[in-house]
Length: 435
Ligand SMILES: *Cc1c(COP(=O)(O)O)cnc(C)c1O
Image (cartoon, rainbow, N blue to C red):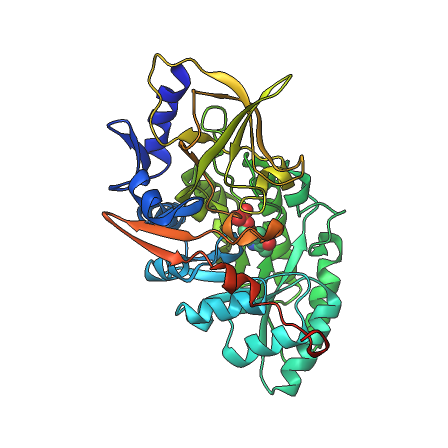
């Protein structure tokens, strides 16, 4: 069976989830051993993969004055943040909740950048009071609000303005953010006017430009087009008298979800592109990768409940569902789904639909996927489940949030426990007239 052998080889390049002696391992631990203790389904993160990916992107920018701000919306467990903080990462936050999580994980406020198009007054106040490296401003109204709050609080707010360069990131429409029709940033044609307004407003300090064109980009061309526009804009704005010292180039570099067909650009190539397009400007380069760092650093482990034979197709029914991992339902995305026991080469594969137990046809992880034979009770792993996995999960169908577990060499730890039924139910409050 060719496909699993190829898969095995590719696994080694991407992460630390590999078959050894016929069993899937996470670093030095058999996934099955962890599953026996934790119960399925659960997310399983690999420390070595996480740090490896952080270092890879950090090294790709070596030679440039730069800082990596992990976009923590991709996965925000304290254990993940602390692992990255120990590597020297800063954080890109998009809400006061993320700001609080970053501070709790020990991130220094001068290594936190605040992104997002809808920062509220309370969120701005919290960041100004606690300390912040910069606000990435997305509209003139936001800029005016920030200025007035900074005046009130007798402080100065460092800002970049997010520019919408009108570039097609050629990614899924739901995660494309750099086209003129998208809600993000300020049109590049308005940049000079908006920077002029920023200078007029009190208690703002213009320090750079920000751009983020989308997520899961699988080619470099859109970055190249966008960054060239930003380079030109840097010159224009400097000629207008603005201080452009930092370029925040956003995140968005894609990862291989389908290990057989996808080969997104290497971080080193991205680094070369950054140097080529903006390296000459003597700016501090900031990047905000999320998926690239954590995407391949986790698997979702699930158990086969039933195999169901339908009239037209067969179904593999898992104990994980769309509430645990919504990416396939939300973005039509592919995850490699592999058995925990390495399939034997002589096993025949067959097409099967892989689904969860929720009463929605959308609760489908894969259609007509080629799989080796599986039976009830077998374990499977969704690969590349680290980014936009656990953070997007819900308790739909009153399915409890699934645990997060982290491996580090030959150790593992539960980093978020499965709630009890009481934990889940007791969050509801009965009004006094029902007591
Ligand atoms: C989502 C987001 C990121 C991270 O995107 P990835 O594709 O996970 O790298 C970075 N910056 C901003 C502003 C974002 O909204």
